[in-house]
Length: 225
Length: 343
Image 1 (cartoon, helix red, strand yellow):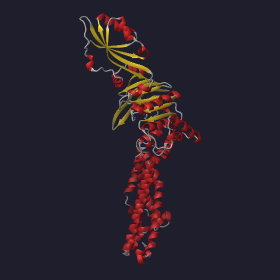
Image 2 (cartoon, helix red, strand yellow):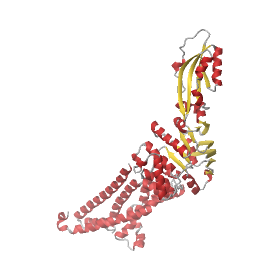
Image 3 (cartoon, helix red, strand yellow):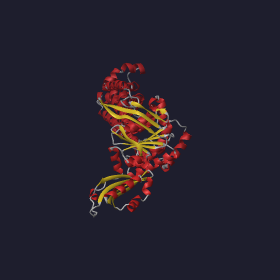
Image 4 (spheres, helix red, strand yellow):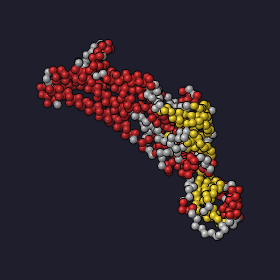
């Protein structure tokens, strides 16, 4: 690849750094969004009608908040969260600063992904646990989460992939990573090579994450078969 | 062991109230196998699920082993549930765990210390005959093996009561028999009370001591299995019994072809017998005593739990007076006689 670049070999360094920045942003914000989104998803499922912590009113309110947050386009999220980002990080520009809007944008998405995964579990399994005298914590940690693990892993991969896309968008407003590289060099300086390489790296990243997710999920499913 | 008093359950479904259980009362004795039979939708599933409060009763009370389950606090109810095992039609095993860990599951819930729990799991796997399958996942097991895991799991915390929610309904007849045999064994070995629901009278016949027939949300008949089988009181019970024990005589056999003399008549009767009387030569002694001919049209013998039970359709031919005497004789010997007609 380096030989192909010829006297453009400076690009390689830039791409490497940008790729690392993207991976760092995406991974951190995915993990952080799960710290909040996973419990939210669990609460969304378990407070639903006829579930183990049924609370219809609370469920409806929480569901509406999640939906409202999900309907805000990411680009607006980016701008809306600038004050918060400044408060938390001290600046609204750069890789670390991007993690804030990425995380917040992903939380409602993660909550719904987790909710969907946990909803797939046969009610009979939950009922069996109830019949054995399990409490809510035991049902969540011993039934819902382990049973939904393959689906949860796929959800994790999808979230990470979404955040790769979002991180590129954040890059345009100075978020760092491959997005910034593509925008400053590829778009503003007409460096088509940079643009092309950025896109290729993004494709590889997305493929890699998806394959990793699929493999892990399949491994678990096969073991259970 | 279980005392159900005036239990009612009303479901509110899309603005409409559905009565699933209507003033049900029954008592299950310690150590017995009690069966509840009914068609789907009759309310039997709701009934069994009320006993460990998977369904909340609308009215009435349920007492299990002295404690009123319907009035326990949440944490008391959890403890009570640990002492009530339950097995299911769809087994409900955790696919995330292997056989060993599935049996371990209720012990984890009850927070039994590891060494003790490990020992217990080994014992249980041995009891249900799955020692070699500990490391397998539920997906690799047959239906019968899955239900064995379900039974081991249900017994993990040493319950006094086992609830069986159509546990054999997803199994083939042969596997059903082996699972029923296992249930019978643990009933005897552990003096475990079993309450089961089913739509299959064979299950009742194989393992139950007493049976309640539920129809249209109410218990319409309740008694010893033998009693209900030999003398069902309601049309619902009749059809359940007939599904297992064929009493219907093929129509073409009902037309007598026996030649008779001028003053003899023929009567078609059905004789039912239970237990000991099945072993006595009552028919031949009747023939010897009274001057009549007997033509055997149809016969059937079965076994309910450990008691022989059967019925015989006979054509009696002789002088009218003698026929009447012969019938009285059989009745006096304690046989159940039903006159089907004059052939």
